Length: 365
Image (cartoon, rainbow, N blue to C red; front, side, top):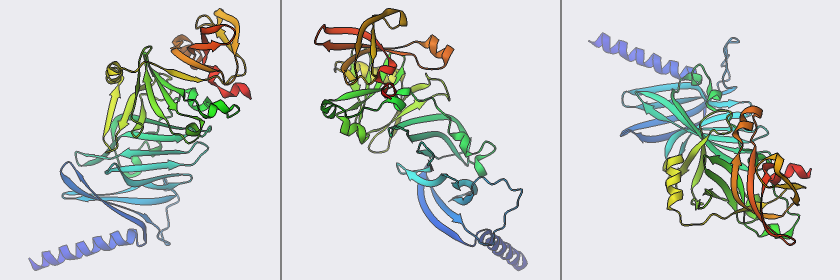
């Protein structure tokens, strides 16, 4: 019996020695404690910066600056490599989000991106299924969108697919890239205006800015509308557009709403319609023309052009939006028409149709 105990002690000592030898110099050590499924888990993350650590030339490195993530609980012990660390301009760290464990992703290419990937523990495995992305675009606007797919087990290097496969390259509405109002006229400083961000069936979504100042500082309220009503979401909520696919311009399928307590709720088209139907607020969407010369049309097609047009900074009320889905499928770009109301000094109130590029500042280049 003594020999067995001695053997176990030696084996344990050797195991500890081996673990220490695998990383003698731990830096940036972070410890977190979470209760998941009524069980306490300890998460420890650290960088391993051993000077004498010589890597095999044939080793397929996921991260140039690797780190280790250890998870411990009763009857649960995992040590994962190449799930956190730094690779060039991209990094993934372990952190907490809304008091829950998550991977925090960040990159600094031309469009700055950060994301959180909540961690689930199921069947004694670390798993992820959703990703919540914040992306800063070239026009300095920020967009939030999310994606939830099949549950994926977190393995060394995120398995065969690699961590980069977690980030589908979504199609973002052109308004995100094109919407940029200049301050050429003093009136733009004070008027409330809206910018289109997406559409689900007969429901359209806008960002409402109280002024150019709020637009520049990315302060807005998300507004949902149909032809008659509008619904304004709480400004303090985090709102993510839920996307269903990688490249389809109609991949916007709902909203993820994260309230001030960190609770996440997904609203699909049916749930959003119910919110809109309860609203008593009359639709009042308005914005500025940006293109140099905006042709007015009697119908949402090129064959109905009139001899009337609008100029940059003309203020219009948007009554409706129509997507020409046939053109989207054929040409792979959004063909959007807006039904607008405009008060003309010469003609009084006019109701016509304009093209999506009317709100595109590129026309002024």
